[in-house]
Length: 552
Image 1 (tube, rainbow, N blue to C red):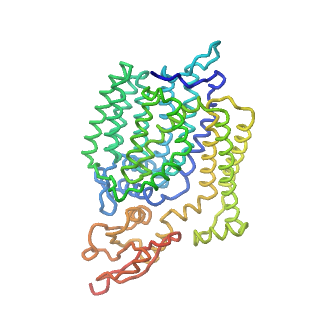
Image 2: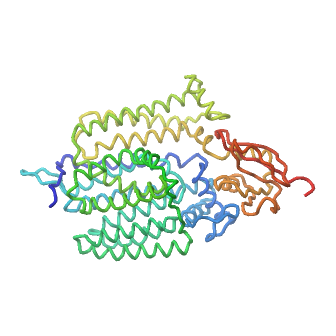
Image 3: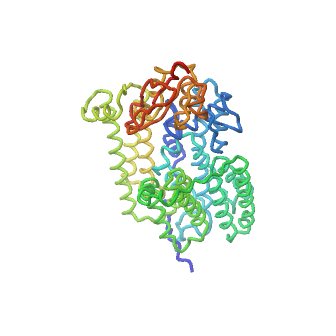
């Protein structure tokens, strides 16, 4: 027998987040990191390398490769980036490739909102009626919960960097969120739900995740098959069909690969640490939802997001603690977190607020202090730490970046003042400060610290050192170099790179070898050592430059 519905929500508490404020939240979250930076190591620049190779004609659309090394089957993301590079030739190629991925992140937020809205409209999710009236209307309640879900997505720490990269996993995330929407909207939007289902799983397979797409197809089909809604039960066939198409797409693109970690490679403690910080603060709220709604676990508003979240969690554990697999469950986790909001006690909400105020204000203050130290040398200790951790970094000043950072900081101060005032009624209030804090800290990092982060995470400083030893028109053999560096050499350095032919038989005049501090500089028969270089922020990793020995 089901336990009573734990949600008690007044009409006053069901007021929606003003649309202008929600749009500003989303803009402050999505736009920083899109402009003014290089592709970062490792996955970001590797994916960009494939996109640039296709756009420039160095690789085929169905056979993308880096320096001759074939891609891993995730063709859809590479096609998307290459299309925008070709369509926007007046923009920097890296910026053009990032634009569609920024739009994909927007799509994740939109689909998460509508998925939560439809789930909250189901009868089992609605709050209890009051004896004398005054409870929230179904539509207003659903909108308020959906606003909370979007804030929960933005507040989740693990999505912050991964969601702003041009990697296949972001396309996979869109597919998972689209499936979440399809399952949620099935009772209300039959045609849209079925189209979304048919697009979601094949999109994941074409982005390099056919195995997870297959598991999600099984989970989604089972969830629909046992539904009390006849229309949803009929949708089960569409989910199953989408799964079969995903299997076919994954096979056609050779995207199937064994990524399950061996038992010896599993790190339970490391995976637990990842789970704790990656899903914060959504996972504590999601656990609270499962407890308070424990008598309703088989109802749609709990079962649908729980099935997707558990699939992502299983993929993370099976792959030895993969944060990119775990990322696929963030929207579903946020939906679960949103259903905790109608059940939170005032003391719990106050604890979330004050923790958010203290934590994110401290982070923002630290960012400002270190920025001042980079620009002026005062305080001296942070300036010395920056010089030690980022050698050769030369600070640059941007009045525009400073103005944007100042405006974001003032907005945070206003938000804290608003939340700690008398605005205690909106259902989504407990997630305003966590989402706002994440957004303002990301904004500060992508304005005040962007030159420093670019220096630390871009391959451009290493390429400049390579250019001192290797002419730009030279051919470079790199049979044992990481894909990220191969991508940087081709897409950012303009070199012709051969990563397939062994060093003994390659026609190239120069050879690059990646090594660590312990390996030193090994001798390579037929090649003369030229230089031993590294990125300024690397400590143990080196790139060794060789030139073909005379007489060969």
